[in-house]
Length: 226
Image (cartoon, rainbow, N blue to C red):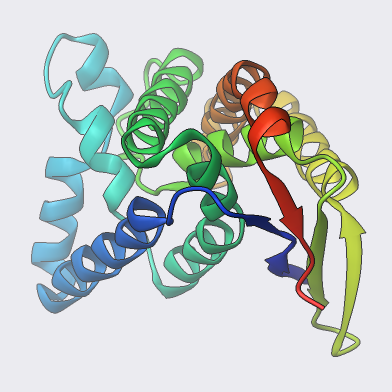
């Protein structure tokens, strides 16, 4: 297994206030969810997770937003927050604090909507920030393709640097292969992963990245961690 643990940082620009605040908010909500105990936690997830069948029935539209702040377990939370920590700060540094918050929110909503579209009859709550984070990764691919991603290869206990275009390219191909495979199943719930939310968020991020890239090139530079 491998995990991103750092990247080349933008020099100058806006401080990543919302990128780091979102991590804190997600952690606080998870601890609250965890404190409820198994039974109440399940009720909490059912209330605020995005259930496609109910949304398409015209109810619980708010869950397209609230689902972005819930997580199914410790590893789900840690994985999502790690990716958010690595990739979000450069985006916010370039597009600004308020613009980043709007981008993140709309990206998450778009990801949730794509999940609902591909799983219209599902009654399983979808939770997690991965759709919004996928939007961040899509924008990062376009805005910083040559940025070096610091990757921990856990099985070898070693760290390597790879170009963002390589790391994120492999990641989205994996999502697309898995998403295509899920079309042959009744729904994505058989795997427990909302593949199409990842894909939808990433595509949204790519489009947003093209819109913001010219601003990045004209105003900012990034420097390495070394």
